[in-house]
Length: 105
Image 1 (cartoon, rainbow, N blue to C red):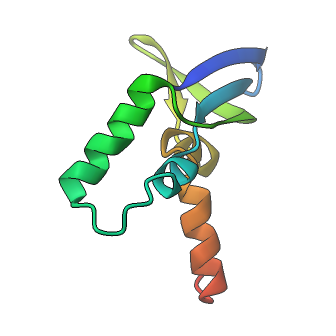
Image 2 (image 1 turned 30 degrees about the vertical axis):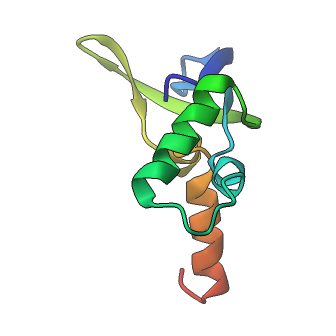
């Protein structure tokens, strides 16, 4: 998560939304870059973390319309599929595509 960067492009206070450009690790590409079929789970995660530490990963950049609301701390983001996809490194979109292919909605 600490590798996710963002830049607020615009804010609509009336509708309580903002357009935010996010750049995040393409988790699926990172996963595919570990090619040893016999790797143990703990070694797999260690290899992914090594690649992240070394900056050896591709990123995705996209603009997401994010809702927000007032809170005691200032503002709180409203969860959405688009925001969850960013936080999951693109995995949510992939998962939803798989479900759609299987006929689930």
